[in-house]
Length: 287
View 1 (cartoon, rainbow, N blue to C red):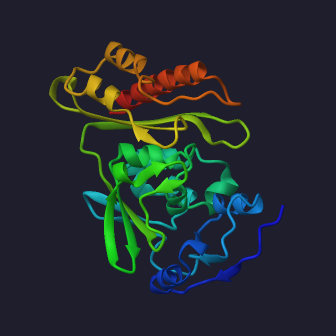
View 2 (cartoon, one colour):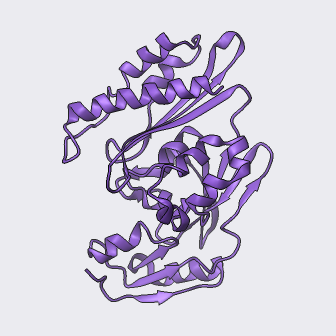
View 3 (cartoon, rainbow, N blue to C red):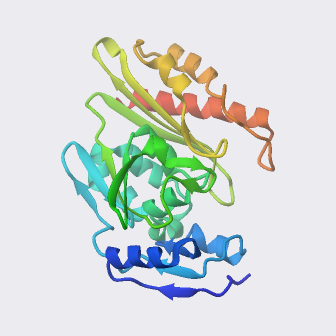
């Protein structure tokens, strides 16, 4: 199908993009890579009267090392995340997760900001962003504000962004020493979206005691979320295979797992337990 008619805008600055959003409000949509928005427009699930292209906006397509954190511009592509030496050294979970997205064509065009702002419940990056406890910067007519990742994802295709705000960058803290991470995904064979995706980070203290465990999950329920019960079962305990298996066995408890064409609720709950166990095991092994 073809999208409904719309007016195309290509602002040359962030200020111009924000002004256009302020002018057109709910009738406007931002586009960066387009892999999330354009399919919805072709199916006419969304019909914006104005399309605001961010590709000419400077300064939001870079990866910047700031020592204790890495700042990622919203228009940074998945392929740039995957290939980044800074991320591979300092935040390998993000590079690994980006490499699991779609296929090379998608990764070369799709952007981290577009993925997060779209908030698809089967997208990969939200799980990693939650586990990494990143902060998201949004800029609008009233200035800039910072949104913790835990507050950003509200529901299916819904975030904490206002209609007149632009997601400009993501600030990701560098995990402390003695940390390991992994992203484990059971993908839909056609779309490569996550039926279940689990991002795990384990930080060890002395005596192999887990100082902090953080686990984000996507593909199950209306939005990506943290598995607080799994984290609590791990924190403060000595890491070993038995502890990981026990924590993972309860991973599906409290999740809204619904049956659909990809499988029953029971099947998805099983996938959650398996993916959590695999992600935690690989994270522990990589410390």
